[in-house]
Image (cartoon, rainbow, N blue to C red; front, top):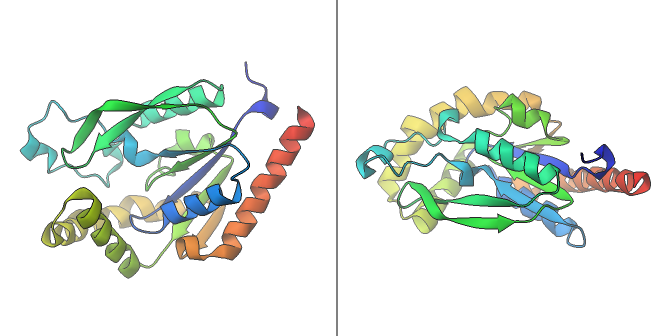
Length: 215
C-alpha cells in the first residue's frame, strides 16, 4: 500500500463554464514546471453515448451531474494515487460521445482535477488536498463559453446562446454555485488573480517540502 507521505497531492479546481478554471490550472502548472504536475479534466469523463442516436445525443445536458462518469474518474484517481498509470478517455464534442481513442497517463507528484462539478461529488471532494473554486461574473463566463464553443466545438452562436439560457445558467445556479461552500480557496477572476495563485502555489510548495522530509 502507498504510504501517506508518498501519496500525490490532489488539487481540485472547480467553477462555472467559462470561469477561467483552465487559466488557473495553467498558471499553477507554470509555477511548478520543475515539478511533476498532471491535469485530469472532468470534461474527458462525460459518459459514453455511442449507443444513442445522434439526435438524442444533442439533447444531453452536459451541465448536469448525471452527464459525468464519475465512477471511472474516481477509479482512475485511485490508480494514480497508487502510482499506477491510467488510460484517460477522450471525448468527441462534435459527435457528442466518447472517442474510441484513449490517452496513456503516467502518475505524477501533483494531480490537478479540473471541472465544473468536481466539488458536487463527495467522493471526489474527499480525495482532494486543496479545493479551489474560480468565481467569475456571469457576463464574462458566457462570452468565454461562446468563443470556445464556436471556435473549438463547431457550434453556432444561436445554439450556444439557447443552450446557455435553457441549460447552462439554470444548472449553474442549481448545482455549481452551491459547491462554492466546499472550497478552501475562492479565486475571483480566474487566472488574472495572481495573488491568489501565488498563495496557492506557496501552499503546494509547503506540502511538497513536508513530503520530501517524510520520505
